[in-house]
Image (cartoon, rainbow over all chains, first blue to last red; front, side, top):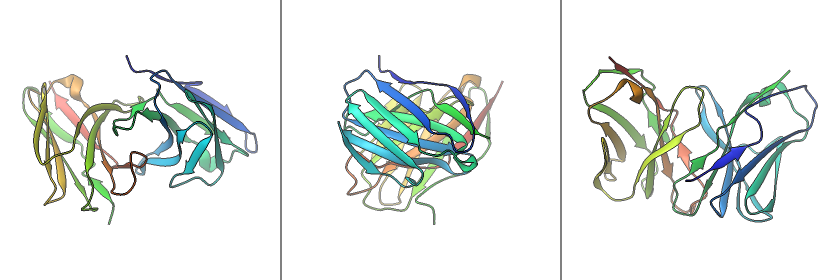
Length: 111
Length: 113
């Protein structure tokens, strides 16, 4: 059974803090993605990775960075959290067929 | 113009009826199309994908693709209250490999018991 896990379901951080969101998939997928989802804006791609140590910017990369040191793990980093980064963060992976499998999501609140 | 458009709803249907959800897209060269279901507070889960014109059936779900008219639809037969959720359409634009997907903002479906 396909499984994508995320390190936290809920997170509360203060403005200026460095935040790490971790995602692990057990399906040996090459591609992994980070999205954020906001009401009325839908899912927006932050970054994606198509191989270990390879990454590409998505539509809204500003204020974020990523790391993929192992195939199964893809981390999203908020270098200095701001209130406008309060959102639901969703990790996903796919094997190249286009069908994405999402993790449970992390609801991040920045105060 | 949004790249992928869906009516936000809510779309209300009685239990047992057919729910019809529609999605239009702007990039004519798009090749891959996906429907996801998202329950409130949960993450999206894949329902089905469709790549060719015509219908594709999976259980109570049927996806219909019309590339000439640039729309993809999802039909849910014998709708159940457990089908109440937001349905997201996603499109893979041409030239983006398997790396980029444009999501609609979703249609909220309410199935009334």
